[in-house]
Length: 345
Image 1 (tube, rainbow, N blue to C red):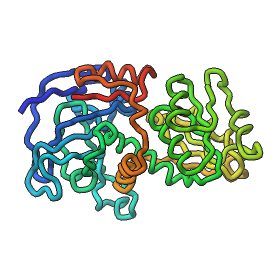
Image 2: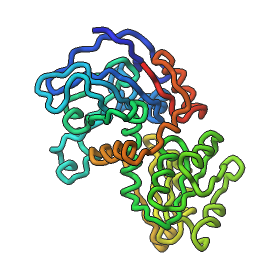
Image 3: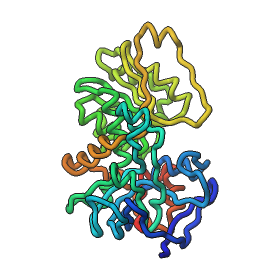
Image 4: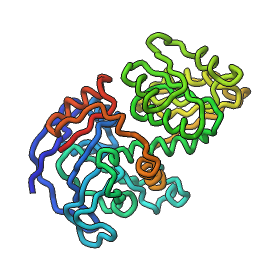
């Protein structure tokens, strides 16, 4: 069987072409992709490759999607042809050191899935068993495709322990940062959103319902603003970094109050370093955490929020483009001209 697909060959070298797709193996299902989304991770991969997601080339590309099951392999339980589904981009093994301790996002055998920028995709058996979910009939494919990125944020919010009445600052207003703003507001926090892109600043208010907006172009040194808007001007209870630059990581510690929490969510380039003033860290009792990825529990909670809480994730879709324009969509995302581009095969 042939299908149209976007294939990754090398950084900034992807091709829209016709490729073979095999029948699903034992435990697998084949899904016709109805909606796929651009993502910051895919943009990074497009720019410089990705040793974890792209182990050989050419390779399928993209990982946020939803669709309809078209074929079912042997020994698949609970799914049939015609089911509307959303899949996470990974699944834990359930058997390694970390899985046995419930730290599924740190699984030593985490099975990743790529290939959402295509007409069809085969879902590995591990994901079918643990991270393939049925969709309600009245939930659109476009909204359902947000379940995977939102799951990362749900994980981050829960591990940070944000509470009602706290003051939270979010630096970096890509899709992840904007969802952090929204979920922190849903927890009852006062949220200050800081970014540089006018489109993203507008969405921080319209989608995220941020209490305050800081334009970092006008105010490149926002420390005083964060502190002025905090309770009794003591500093933020929680500062969340969603950029992924070591120099921004360092600055986050200047925003928080004594006893505050710095959440370094944005992943930096491999091999980079950052430094902290130890007196500030120790004597002001600053808590530091960095959360990676999601788990089956948070993936399910993300889908519940989208459907049952009617989280308006569709507001993050800047425009819709066909599969053959995926590279153009990624470049728009990379250049800050889009938050999310919806790819319709």
